[in-house]
Image 1 (cartoon, rainbow, N blue to C red):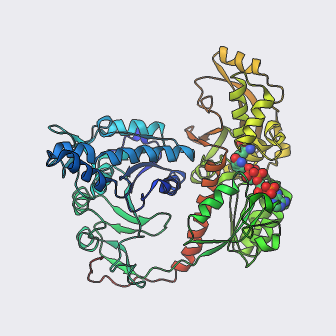
Image 2 (image 1 turned 120 degrees about the vertical axis):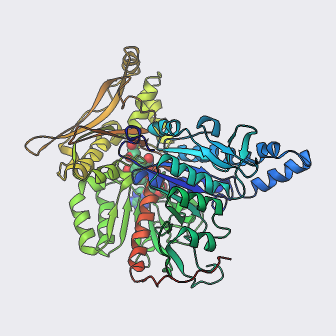
Image 3 (image 1 turned 180 degrees about the vertical axis):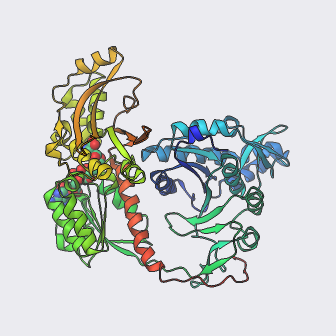
Length: 583
Ligand code: NDP
Ligand code: HSE
């Protein structure tokens, strides 16, 4: 059962990634992005991973070459190594995009199986140990396919055993769902690679799934799900649609074919270059116009970059991604795109804070939408948290500028101010003019956006009291440490009884045990107090290419799903029909 105290207000989702999506090392970023999508939707995640494609076979071959007809218990020792390796890589990939993740091995979570050492069945899990880790991390990555065994020490769970692991974790942790991520977006009545008009099940029973999903889902896992009443979803990376397997009658229809969206990317610097990598990783979904930059020659690859706005915006793009910096000029570009009904994604807090009303009004009038998750918190999903709390907020405080937090961390180590600023620039954390960070304008922009989202009140950044970091010396930062305190730039806002807002950005000395004091380097941390007095913590990396690009691209994928959803509304499910095997 879920431990209510530890789970807090977050639901748990078990995600399983098999070797159809973990083909090579290059696939971990896409999987990290998928996990991040669930984290920012407010879920805790147990990510169950398989070995990279082909690795288990190659380990079994190796076991045979070296050991001959060795006992199964010894073979299992080697066969499971691929999953342990994969779980470690997955946690590393999550760390890169700023998600708090850890891994647990079977012995650390009391995961026990019984039976044949190469085809065991799971029987026990120390769920309290897993919840304890989930309390301090958004994601716990676990190796599928393997467990402890009383007689053999460690064993494996048979072909496709990671499906069984995922179902078992969902049942024992009381997850609200388990989602098996495959290279197809659900269970089809026929192989969609052979018949482009194949129908996909939106839902089906366990018995029907056993028959229809041969080779796609381990039958043992489906039986375990039925016995434990676990709802299984089968989906592809990034897809909105899934096949739900539960005690449900079959419903199937021909899914709409996603058209490739035309994307205009404006800016290809620290953040834009990361977003471009993500866009290029989904050529099935996105066609990217020449990217707008100031000096195309600097970027090489003629034709891919342009300084001409008309070329960047050619062909009436469906999606405009603004990553230029500045406030008024990018706002003008976004307003024009929204006026034309485009979906707009930006990380630009200066533009959003200053032009909030006009951007939103234009999105509504034009029928498009503006998304800006990365503008506040970078990869820390603070705006999504506020949206979920739906106005039920009385105060927000946080470390919301990665550069300033990085500077204060370095000053406490004795670095000079100028060296620390230079390093923050090199790491891609600082604004084009780092004075925006150092003089707290950036934090004020973010606070202004937070106030809009939390309280629906307009408080422009220049009306927010702020304090510069310029007077902070290494000596002051080190003296604070000696007193058991940590210097932090903190932005705060609070709803007052008369409906007005008190807001400020200050450099403060926090006790080392304060939840904001632990923010390291470019990390951001927010504490949101709701009307019941409960404090919600939101942590993540607040600056830098990958955390920011991941948040931007998550918005891009939301926009893609929103556009696809409009197409999907036209598709009507047909009645339940006899099932054919998926080839
Ligand atoms: P960079 O300065 O690294 O990149 C800016 C890019 O935009 C460059 O490719 C630049 O081209 C291009 N550009 C700027 N102005 C123009 C213009 N007038 N015409 C054509 N091209 C232009 O910025 P970042 O990637 O760091 O930041 C982009 C946005 O994301 C900003 O709004 C920032 O506040 C926000 N952000 C940044 C984060 C970070 O960690 N860096 C985190 C969260 C948000 P060229 O190189 O040729 O000059
Ligand atoms: N310069 C900003 C920071 C980028 O350091 O926080 C992220 O918004």
